[in-house]
Image 1 (cartoon, one colour):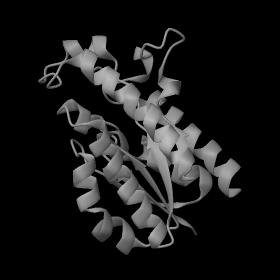
Image 2 (cartoon, helix red, strand yellow):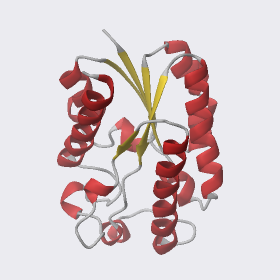
Image 3 (spheres, helix red, strand yellow):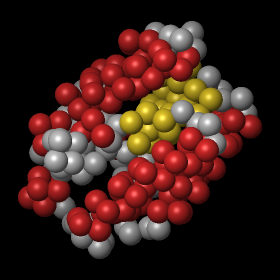
Image 4 (cartoon, one colour):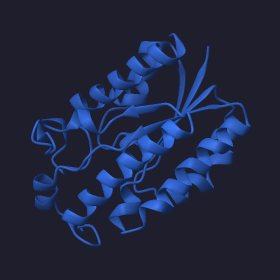
Length: 198
């Protein structure tokens, strides 16, 4: 059975959801993959990079799906820093004969997030949304240039007016609900079937 490592933050870990309903579990069940979930809530891409070798490389999966960056931007890190961390993980994976896949981070439901009881992004929600859009666009461009597959977990969460679809989020406006996890899983499953003939 082929193995998939999922490296990320709370969007991968599956905040507030039963484990069997998170997108890594759904993907593993649909594709008969041995999936290991290395998502840690609140982690940055720097944290992901620091644990990439002991967790992912030594696990020796066939594939690694890397999705992160929202927490970096929450603290107003520069987009280029996030890009550097993500692509460093991709190139490490390739060096060790692991196929990297980049997951585009989902948008933020600002209206719901503003009502939640936690500290807002360092530079405010408007700045966060701008940077997140910039990150997603640059991830797509540089991944194409580097011939790294991309799974879009961003656009499916947007309505026609390009605002986040609140019906796909938990009440905090940051994390996908069960429907949202299924949406991410469907995108990944479709990509694996197209790219890797599953």
